[in-house]
Amino acid sequence: MSKILILAEHAAGKLAAATAKTVSCARAIAEHNGADIDVVVFGDHAEQVSQQAASLHGVSRVLQCEHADFAQPLAAHLAPELAAMAADYTHILAPSSMFGKDVLPRAAALIGVNQVSEIMQVLGEREFKRPVYAGAAIIRVSVPPDCKVVATARTASWPAADSADATAEIVKLQTQAEHPQHTRFVENTNAGGDGPDLATANIVISGGRALASSDNFAMVYQLAQQLGAAVGASRAAVDAGYVPNELQVGQTGKIIAPDLYMCFGISGAIQHITGIKDAGTIVAVNKDADAPIFEIADIGLVGDLFEVIPALQKKLA
Amino acid sequence: MKVMVLVKRVIDYNVRVRVKSDASGVETDGVKMSINPFDEIALEEALRLREAGHAEQVLVVSMGSDACQQQLRTALAMGADRAIQIATDAALQPLRAAQLIKALIEREQPGMVLLGKQAIDDDNNQTGQMLAALWQRPQATNAAQLEVQGDSVRVTREVDDGLQVLELDLPAVISTDLRLNTPRFVKLPDIMKAKKKPLDVVQASELGDADDSLDLHIDDWQAPPKRGGGIMVEDVDALVSELKSRGLV
Image (tube, rainbow over all chains, first blue to last red; front, side):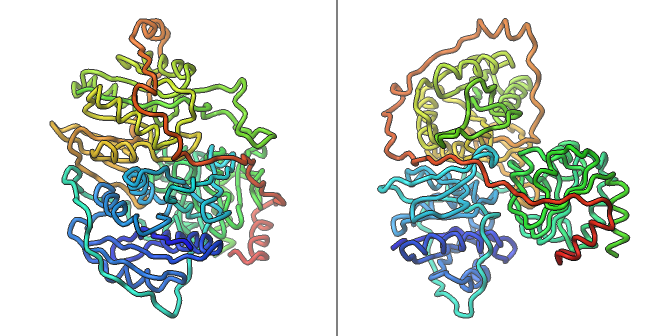
């Protein structure tokens, strides 16, 4: 039987959806030979988040570890804690968010193992599928028998575990490691859009370089607002400065799986496509009938986005 | 300060990668190879640190067979002062790569190590964090801006909901994101000059035992499943009725 520890991601008293997705990945591992699934919450005040984690279906126990140093989740502080806890577990998992990608490899090195990045499918307790080359290839990765499995779950590949009626036990845990003082948090600056979170939104409206300016992107925001959607963008649009970095979708931005993805003026480079191919329905609007985005779109429309978007707004009003 | 930059030889960003029919890997015969684009950004940043007077020397390091000397020469042509190839024919996984670099760091004593946030071949995003762990030094991943202030560096990182600023004591490991800078083009005279710059070869075996018992076993390379069955619609009316009939809006 496996013993799985999941590193919880949270902010402002809320457990991130990425954590519930990681629980689903852990449950897929548990299907092979059974597993206890523990979630560890590090925070300066972690009670609220621990309760949310305890309600997730499949979670056996929540470990609540509070310390003033955890007010901000720094890899230099969290990785040694995870490494100290690893002795009791066969698997350590984290979401493949920026947070998980930052912390987990540092913990893996302290534990002395390689990490499996971006599990998209579980084949066995120690055997997984994951994408490489921006999704141009899918490989099978097996962890050697003597090594702990340290892995990130590709969030776009897993549904969020639902909340159960029963709640798991919450155990308070003391910190177990030294926290180096060589890394200091200064500040967070958020662009602070009011709309839904791009990583978890059901509908995403994206724009590309063809929008041609930051001002024109307002149309994308308006359509998104109308549909209750999050806004995304191609790398080209981000590089051109039309929208902030955190809206980038693709290999080096966010990998998302909304029910509906509508993109305007995005040609469909493989690096972008890898970020959206788990979407339920992909709608593409592009002036160029030969754009590669049409090869993967479920519904395609050849047209000028500057005419299509206003027409859509009117039709959907 | 000496800045060490790690560069990896990868299939060029513009190549359409194809899986071999025997599922043993991807086609590399006759395929253009380049410096991993994120590592190129790391190198550019190191060169700018030198130009701003924060660094005296930019040392570029690559690990692999002699073929990676080609990427080291490109890095020298971009402006690096010295290059070291850690020679090995093994396909290094991130932990082993980090162990070798850690051993080289003991010899070279850099004040900062810069590398790309991920390599565009294995998309692992691990080596920098692992190196920082083994070296017991600070890390800042996904750097979008960095500013050296005496014995520390202030790094603006790209995170999921915006930007985060950290202050790190030096030496530190910093992995670079797209928006940090735009790498310079290499000029022809610089390619000629680069041929005279020092490129040393260090055998991986000199830096530690070749222990591959921790390696993940990788096989069964497959092309991703294709999305199919898409349709084209004529106009916005048809698009909206299609979306409505599928219950999407």
